[in-house]
Image (cartoon, rainbow, N blue to C red; front, side, top):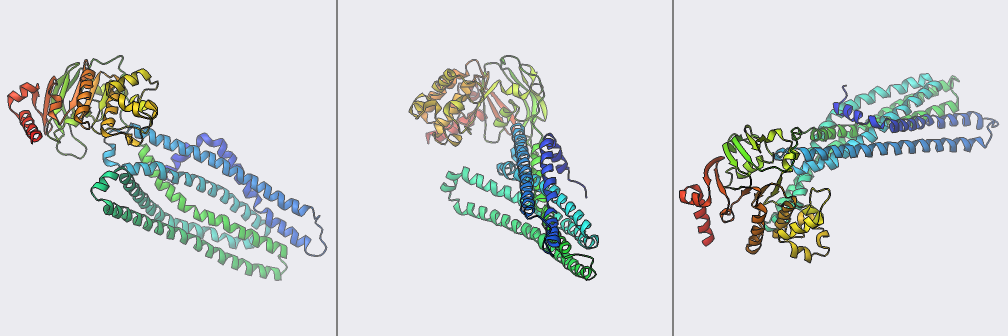
Length: 578
């Protein structure tokens, strides 16, 4: 039976804790060595204390028994403490590695991985690994040592009877091997369904308003009950497989004990064994059943841990974004150039962008318009390196962005998206997000420029007021202005605006547009807009259809051209008039 590569990898991760594992091993050895002490004391008591006149000093009896259990208690505490110390450190290491990789995975990672599965891996599956390390390591070593010590004691007492007991061990190994494969298969299914259930819960808590408005209560209940029922089914199948192992081993043990008693009675008739020796042997043999039972039960957490390790290490080993590239020195000029760029999403036959050639000059504001699915967001997302083109190149200040480190590249950019993301922190922390040493004056200035001053003044703690999960304590417009203030605070030479004013009322939009116009001065700005009225002042407008640039020019030029842009403009204003 080959050892799982995941177990070998975990073993390598435990190397830095060799000292504490050694102390835990020492505690296990002491605990195992105390096991035969009790049957040995029983033998002496029966042979010398209860037959004829006792030759044992009375004070030695409580001293021996109490001393034995004090030693056993101290060694057990040492083992438990050291194993807990090691396992909790291993848990933190695994979670740190997983979280670090989540920060570095490419943007398309979540296209094939649900948030629920990620949360499930970080919170549940990694805990299964720790349970395996703690229980399996402790049981395998301590109980194996206990079995060895008790077997040695039994051989010393009566080697003939011990041979009968030894028949039990290979039979248990057969049972464990047969159930192990089924348990691992069931555990993989259990973890998959558990991830699905986590995803349902995560989506339900995130989409409360949608569920209530669209009457999705029954649908969500059915989704939850289906996965909960499936999870219960896997749990029962795992429990039945696991539970069957214990009674089978106990029946084997009962058969062995029965045969031993019969042989011992025969030996007693031939004066080959004393009453004390028989009681001591039976006591030691019955004590042997507990560690054997523990060893049989190891298979459950072992298979669960191996299956969980596969998922956890798969996440840790997910390819990360590239980390190579040169560091930019100083502030970028903001010159961006697309040269024959083509890009297609994974598993998509038709490219999202094809043959894009475009030069954006420093300080220029370029707006991207077109019908949904035309490639506007895809094109803009190539600039900060969220995706890499399959062919062609993108240049920043005459440097290919593939040759620039992503950290350095993104340091030159600020972004405001229509899907605002805020953090469960204070107003100030959200505005200065990413700055290790936030400047309070700059925070206040950014808030003022984004027309947040009145809102902040109305909050109980001003800039130090927590805003809740994703800014849940703010209105939609306030959340949008928070994102704008964050971009203003960063003061990057390149600004990306993706429907930055989509959640604002008309009055707030006019105020923020004024702030944005001031912000965009001397900055290269890329604007994605569906409301064409917001980009009429852009230096140039790029019209995208099915991943191709079909028109390029100013607002007046494109209207005069009477092409796609003019059609979109007339259609939109007709709708607004209606």
